Image 1: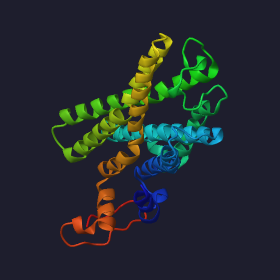
Image 2: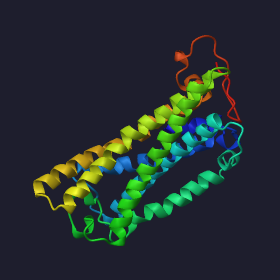
Image 3: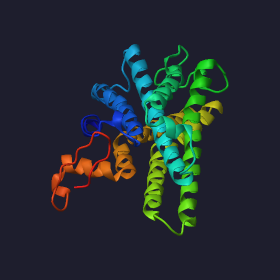
Image 4: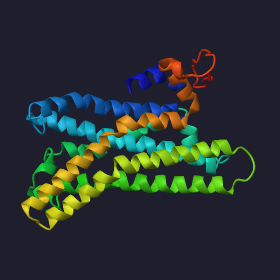
Length: 289
């Protein structure tokens, strides 16, 4: 992620780019939020603690993790929507196409994510609550904090997944119906949105399903052993949501062959076949070596 950040800032100069580089740069920033949390989590585990004993640190960690997941989902979805409009409606003017060349839409996404992450900071939010059952954790006692938190958690995953499925189906259908012209661009678009949907399904859907099962078990007031089993399953599958930080660079490569060429020429030149030529850009228009 640090190497990708270096390319976006010093090589691609994303702020001058006419491509998806602004969205992808914000996806890198979302991943960096998770990287900041990892040393603290590692320290807690080494000390034999499930979470930080410091209430403020624990709240801050949860805020960063919620913001990381929300931003990752948002920019993955926006990238797929942008590719959908480019492929399915190439000549149609749309707000996303007009704003993607500027930082306005990215700033708006971050501003919208902040209030959605506020539930993690509310007084009624029990820190690391998946470990214990409290009255505020069940859906029986409907209060602002728990209800809003659960609504944000599931909405943040279900709605983007529906959008991703729709974009993928429409782009695949466009490829199937196109009999003449350049099919390479369409195939690349299909590969990208399919990759994003698979990544999304692998990282975020399992923890959402496990969370739903956990809530149902708690509402039904199941035995403590059953609740403990559901809690372990949820906490274990939550780890998959952290893996988007590792898998997101695949999206950068599938989204732009130019980015892949630039990355290989800078960090793995021995993998580049044939004579190498300088690959630098100030506009995002890189040259294949």
